[in-house]
Amino acid sequence: MHPKIVEAVSEAVARGYQIHPDAIELLESVVEKIDVNLVLREALLRKLHAGEIQSVLTGEEVQAMVAPLVVTAEPEQASKPSSSPLRPEEVAEVEVLKDPTEVIAPLEGLEGYRSLFMSRLYKLYNVVKQRPDSRQVRSISSLNRTAGQEAKVAGLILEKKLVRNRVELVLDDETGCLDVSVNGPEALSLSSEFLQDQLVIADIRFGRSGAAVAKTILHPDVPDRTPSYSKKRVYAVLTSDIHIGSRTFLFEAFQRFILWLSGRLGDEEIVSRVRYLVVAGDLVDGVGIYPDQQRDLEEQDVSRQFLKLAQLLEQVPKQITIVLTPGNHDPVRQALPQPAIPRDYAEPLYALDNARILGSPAFLRLNGVSILAYHGRSLDDVVATTPGLSYARPAIAMKLLLKARHLAPIYGGRTPIAPEREDHLVIEEVPDIFHAGHVHVLDRDEYRGTLILNSGAWQSQTAFQANMGIEPTPGIVPLVDLSTLTTITRNFTKPSGQEGA
Ligand code: D5M
Ligand code: FE
Ligand code: ZN
Image (cartoon, rainbow, N blue to C red):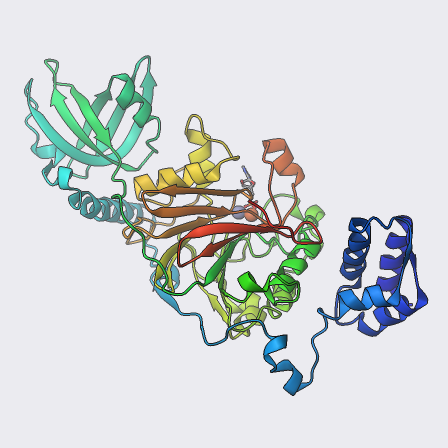
């Protein structure tokens, strides 16, 4: 008997079931094509649902499970509409609006950082200028600092200190620095949201001592807007953090997800409309990412990790465009922005005709709907430095990035940022969908017309995450209906693929 069948059968027997020899024969005939363990589990689950505990699993019952999974090679059968519930006339249209891969140009050390922060400031000034209330921003060096003088300034937060009942900020706008104190409950609660090195706009008034007090202080923020919708009802499946190669990678759940995407687990009405699969980084677990990672790896060779990923993604139907962007576990520079994963590691992914391999952040348009896909490493710094935030609600941390109009403002924290000539991490255009991962927790929010999604993971809790108090929600996938920007989820951790909220 094939070892996989031995394994599957002993599992079934351990649960109190017997397997009829016809069923075993049938499994032997398909063992190379499908996951027999999965088939047996599904079949047993059906029996359990039917109230049949500790009975014999027959050949017919196994056949009923196997039939939809085995694709026949007959060309005329394969082209029959009944075997293909997808509507191939509705093809995927991915427009890549921004991809850092070809444009990144790091400079040397200090000069690079100067250039980066100048670019950040100018890009954010352009954002600020679009606000009707902020056209009269004065440069810090031109301020008249006599008592009673008022002005509007905009600068990057160089320092932020909480002193008793007020916040002391140092703003820098490249012409100079300004100490600003923020008083009053409203301003105080707002300033707890401000991230180090982000831009803020302040209405200030100079006091007798020559110190500036902020009357109001604002994020660059996004205007209240109506997003764009697709004319056709097509779905984008958003995911991230697959972590192939890790011992805690949920192979079975991921395989079930791929089977579902390929239309082999029913749910036709939805599946037939999926046209995009966007993966926001941590495709593989990588090697040497953290000390002693070998202990946690099932596959130690990063090229083989990609080969495994490609073997799984190969089964995704060709009318679904797969967008693959890197994360901090992938073999590409860690400093943001990250270029696309290079061919030398990931040739099998490049060989997939329906895959687009891009850098991070990537700004795309899918059937007219814009999406910003970014791994989300900086969420660690946002959560660590903002009172009230936690890893349980990454979408709230993502909302702060949107308000700050920057994907990774905090410099000098855990997130490495490259000394680029231009700051590619400023959110110049507001996306219809803001997609990130990294935190391994599925979360959704909405902010002024933008759908915010953190897409969870395919890795169960690691010892490290347990220490950090991170409770991942792996195996649950959000799908966005691009014609309405509403979200549904599917949970692949359970054999029957039940619908989530
Ligand atoms: O990160 C998965 C999650 O684990 C993410 O929320 C951050 C957290 N994490 C991972 N490594 C670290 C370190 N070194 N410090 C703090 N938090 C961490 P992933 O990128 O998948 O490893
Ligand atoms: Fe991850
Ligand atoms: Zn990550």
